[in-house]
Length: 148
Length: 148
Length: 148
Length: 148
Image (cartoon, rainbow over all chains, first blue to last red; front, top):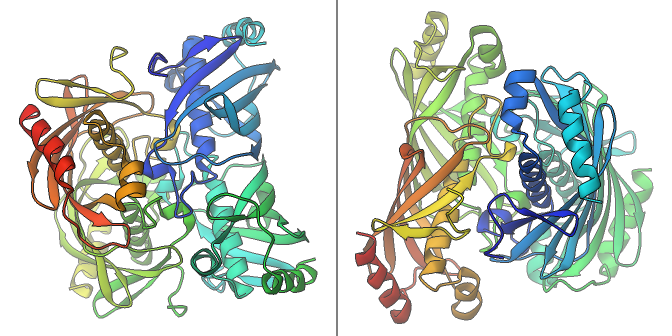
């Protein structure tokens, strides 16, 4: 785990991103609060996309675009706990003209705890749907094959 | 909206719970961060169940039980923004021996922004599945008809 | 408590704002996570200022201004727990040309749990210090006397 | 920065811990939400203490003890923004029989953005003050000199 870089790395066709569980992530039931896995997943997607060469702040400031989650399904199989060392495994599974699909698994010691399936849409900062810029789409498509 | 009590109220067979959007809920894209709708939904479920006569802390301390989310699907239709006054509409749609299903809609002026569908399981505080205690199950079943 | 409106109310020269503790606010130690009291305090300040007639989103969109916290001191006296019904008591204690001071106490049954002292500065959305617009300053000064 | 291990490292008598700013950390003003710096600081303290050989979950489960923040002062000098790469610099500055003091600075490119000063108290999980166990106190005292 300590070998995982801060931005994660690609291995076996998927992006692997390390997450440590801190007090902020847990709740009074002693486990990670259910909404917080979506934060872990978003961090992993951001770092995966950063490794593709895309900074989201640049995308927002230069192109006025952001990726917004349109649909998210989460299956909670086993709880994570304080101090756990997790790895978020992410795969880009489809790219459309204005959207993309990502499959993610929050794992501990290789065992899946939460499985997520997401559809993201490219949006203007005013909230209107927008086409993914061609050069970005090319980058994503290149990596699509890599993560399958 | 100001007429809505802090715990929400039942109307048209559903629980209505008010949520104000604060800075903490938003992100740099100017909209509510996608994981935070799950917080709004959990607040609404908690208050709905509280109106059924159940305090979750009592359930945890006295019976060693808690309801954990097993599956959550969220459809993001329109974004909410800072200062928005939202209403979370919740319906209990099924009760099993150890689980229940809830449908929720985060709305603004009656328009759905995010639709959620959840399955919750009764768990011991050690994380093992448990049957819902009979008196609690009776209460939930009573309200099931009320919210349909 | 149930008598407290969603925006709180002024009583004895201070703004009183109700907060319910949900799972999202707690951590694995069974108490409210220390950073989350700052969220409660910010909600209360927002509602106090809203009762003064100021919507922060309008301030941001129309005048390009926001209030940013410059200094915050928090004394943690007693922990809050799941399901607790808290009241945040807020007093505006000073108004300057570009800043204001607020004293806040997160209480349960009239007993202070966390005491906060804050200095807020008026800023442009680009992050530069700015003078508080005169009409807004008049409103705040009017309420300053009210809350002392 | 990429050289910083996930747990941070000691350098020049202080613990250095890397934090990337994600969407979850920001708000609609385009900057990191003020309460979230306390999360960054707590992550850094946890990792510093972990490097001292202490796992907080073990402390809680085996000794029934946790460190709770009793006082926190935060000076907000400059805002952090989306995608920023921050380093939290932490120094243990005092150890008492039942408490310790920590000074922390959230920095970007060596420039301090937020300065924090904290007092933490050793508590039982029931919330009563407790003395720091002697072996733990020895470890902390050993590192106190290291970080000064």
